Image (cartoon, rainbow, N blue to C red; front, side):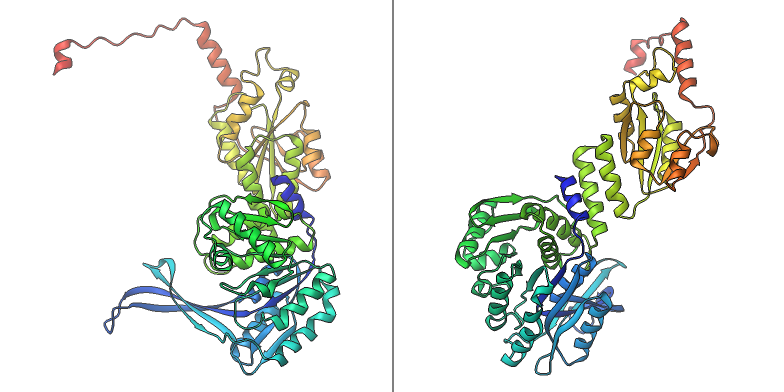
Length: 512
């Protein structure tokens, strides 16, 4: 399944997506929480910097830009300084702001978070202050929004609605938008407001409520996967949706679909630092995937990865396709192990290159793993981001005119021993006497070889240089080689070595 997800990521393209909803400016005030104030029993924060980030629908648009989508954002800001900052940040991110409406009657929604560090580390949110207006936008503003987006629906491959209950996502705006988008064959995915009226989203392709939002919408307490199935199906049936993606934090996503059995797509456990922005990231991934035509179950798995990467960050941070690919590769290696076939490894290498990683390959028999090998492989790993060790098969070792009793250990044993080293990312077995074929198929960025070789003596050098790669000879650990170790073992076998037994200790001395 992981390889399929990697393939889907590589086929995403650059779809054009419309995002509409409530724009938010997030301000962060960072500092050290040094002591308790003498004026009142409150923590005193000594500020050292401020930061602004995009939130709400603006963050969804920003996340999509991080995922290399083309984005048009429709929404409302005030005519205040915060509104100008939001527009500037969006423009710098490459978001089309032509459907952004300025309303002098309402402030730009702003959330100020005070982030304190204890003893100069471990930042935590201490307080949040919100400045906002929640009543619906005026009819005049709603009509301006629709006029800015409805004539352009043919430009997009998907529509995302980010409802934070700040007044933009009203029936006056959403009803004509959803109807016309679905009539045009566009998927519409909604991140619903907490406690919102789901009649606003009737007829959408899907919704992405979390546990709490699902419970408020259905009255069903979502503590189990079965409860999530039941609640998700109720949403689908009650509001004419194609599907409901019930997000279950550490438990992944429960997918309920019209006319189909619900399914659970689990996620792997992560270190959670901050859940801020995770819902926006999941919505962005759903929008990107639907625009690219990814099947819903695969899309849920990708959304799990994207949301998981987001919660590992402090605050709202853009996640890139490169980071998702890298995480998929990491998860694949954990689930399938380091020992791969050549075809499996070729797919990993393609994905790693798309993630901007440099691949290093070395080859050999590695019959007896010793300290020289370990040092050399550690040095090889430092030449790039990923180290592949290609080992000769048992047949290949025998064909290389080794002694008749070599290899001492079979290929699977040797592969597993190498896979146990932290410096090694992948192990692959090849049957040929030279690595030429596997080098041509995998095309590593760097070919390295340990021992007394010069660069121009390394076998396969011409293959690697031919496609623009690099070849490098590495050092050798003095006095340590497989051949020498085998020689000493054979000598020991031919000699009758008498090992004296220890002299027994008298009973009285043992008692003492």
